[in-house]
Length: 349
Picture (cartoon, rainbow, N blue to C red):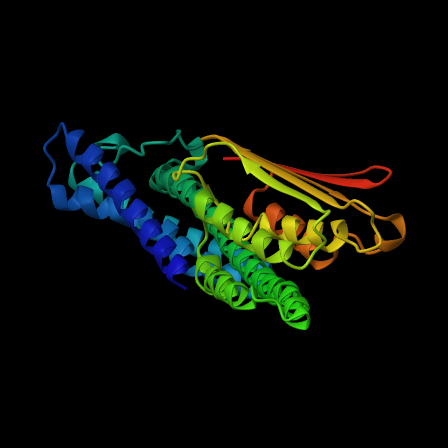
C-alpha cells in the first residue's frame, strides 16, 4: 500500500513538473505580450484530457480490465476536449487578432485544414496537442506501472526468501540440538567426569543457536569458535583412534558469514565419519578466507553401507540456504571416493 501511494505521489509530481515546464515555455515564448492568464488557461485545458485519462480512466482500467468501456470513455473525452479547447482557441484568435497557435502554446503542432474545412481550423490546431499529450502521458503511466509491478514482485520475492530462510533456521536449531544431546547422552552412560564441562559448552552452543543465529551475518571468528566448541564435545564420545583436525588461516573479524552455515557440514562429517564400524575414522576440515572469498573443505571417512542417507537435513538445508543467501556467488561440491567424502564450499563476497 505504501509503495502504491509512493508511485501515485511520484506520478503527480512528474505531471506537475511537466506541466510547469510547458507553462514556462509558453510564457517565455510570449513575444506579443499577451495576458498570461489566457496562455495559462489554454495550456491547462490542453493537459486536462491527459490528466483525466492518467488519474481516472487508466487506474479504473487497471482494476476492472474493461478495455471496451475504457476506449469509449477515452474517445468521448477526446472529442469533448477538442470541441471545448477548439472553441476557446477560436475566441483567442478573434480576441487577439492572430491565427498563430505558437502565440499561445509551445505545443504548436498543426497543419492547414483542407479548404472545405478552413472555418474549422481551430479544431485542427488543438487536435495534435491533445493527442500527443495523451499518448506521452499514457506511455509514462505504463512505464510507472511496469516499474511498480517489478517493485511489488521484488518485495514478494524478498518476503518469500525471508520466510524460507526463517523456516530453514527453525529446522537447523532442533537438528543441531539433537546431535549435541546424543553426544551428551553417550557421555552420561559412561558416567564421564567431563559431563559438566560438556553441559557448559552445550549452553554456549545453545546461546549461539538462540541469539547469534538470528543475525543475518556474523563475524567468521564467532563461527570458528562454535565449530571448535562442537568438535570438543564430539571428541569426547568417539574413539581415541579417530583423527579429528580443524585448521584455519589467520582470519579477520571484518569477514562476515551467515551464522551456522559451516556447522551443518561439521555435524554431517561427525555423523558419517565416526561410525563405530570404521576401523580408522578421520575428519579433516580446513578454512581459508580473505576479504573477497571464503573456502571451506571438509573430508571424512565413511562406509558405503552406512551412507544411504548421506547429507540428510544438514546438507539439504545448507544447499537451500546458499541458494537464498549467496545466489551465483557460491560453489558447493560434494565428492565421493571409495571410503571418503569430501565437501568443498566457496563463497564470494
